[in-house]
Length: 389
Image 1 (cartoon, rainbow, N blue to C red):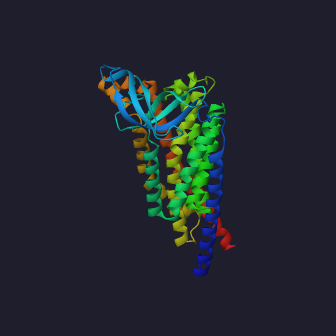
Image 2: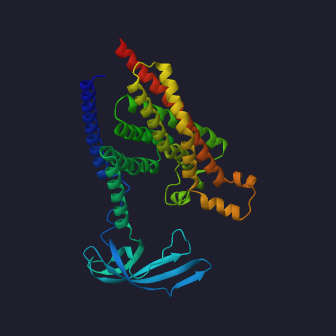
Image 3: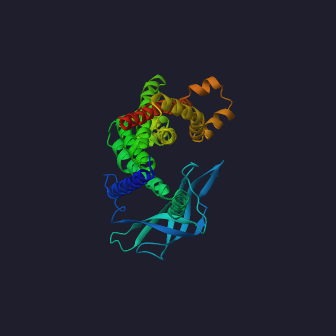
């Protein structure tokens, strides 16, 4: 390819990138303001959610039972926002004896507080401390992440940050409300993964043959993972109730939900990120090979792509194992501490669910390598054939 042709191709690619960024930014903005029907108003006319500063605490109402506490912690809080800003109120913090849910405040902490107002809405009847206020530090961490990403990767970092934001919005505004409305979780998750894969891959890898090869390869790997999750989910007698808060969701007015389907859908949703990563790696390597040697045919391109896939797949599967293992380390430690035999351990519903999650996700990750190699080689060989003609 001549230098003018390369410059023209690069400019065309940049224009497509900008158009895709603008489109995805517009869709993200629309999703941000989209009403799903599950939003709560700002509590009600009789309540207000504010940030508060804990001035003092009274722990006399707390009782220690082993490693947990139960009772009520009395707080004095200064309201830091809203129309009651500056007022000092007495608040309550109910402690129920569950370490994963309880919180204990100290003077100087900032808390998320719900104010219950009188009938006229002009005074505070009482206040309830919900939890520590973390939005500020969360915003700082998110901003630092975006700045570092952009500083390191430049324009690609901007696209990666946009894809991150878009993915979060699609999950929060589309997938989760769809689950709550009773849509088929497997089909809905497959649709969401398809949309996210297209947006992320074409945004980062570009809308050309490299992006198309990565997208089709990752989609094929996700389909394989989804089929295996359904097959082995039935053989494992998987029960979605093993996941945290699932039972609470059923009791919250959603007993009709297919919790097992949601659990199985989560398997290929969780593995889709690693699948996309591997597909992009192979497609990018294949594109580089083709750029260096555009005369290579389908067979040579396929062999090169398979070599790349064999080189990167083993570490990716281990990465997936480590990522999943981090989520149930405490669970395994509990059974190890109790001396539970391995035969018993591997047959427990909690553990078998995680084994299913890990192995099926890893199986899909292994298959995406040859699938992407095959699809990419076909696309680039076809391009060569067109140029030769």
